[in-house]
Length: 135
Image (cartoon, rainbow, N blue to C red; front, side, top):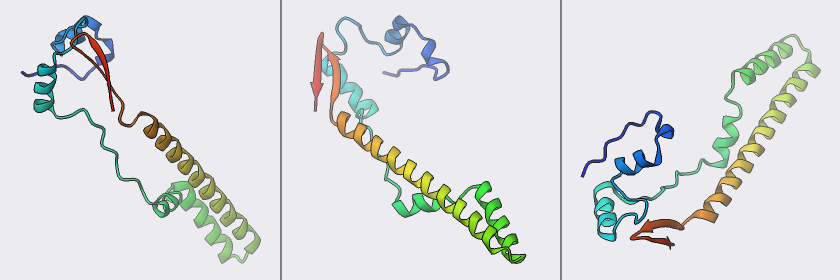
């Protein structure tokens, strides 16, 4: 069985069109045998988590920005002209910017891990006219 559908504007499809494309029934869902057949053909419906970046890499990535490069250049020019206070102020701005970006990335990572823990392992199925929750 080949399921062919366009990936363009899939949000515009009606329920009837989606049911037709995926060759299923809204009243009964897939039979167990059809679900197993599709699992064998298309693979399991499993989200594989990506490897998380190391904390050091996240910190270093905060310095990969054209604005940071420009500020570093400005600090270097200030040092060249022996304006040490201005150079230190620019470097402090760079470090504060990196710290804020790093903390925001870590907070986002923590939030995503929390969401992942809440939904990990729960699967909601509609097969043979029954709603099933598997873990």
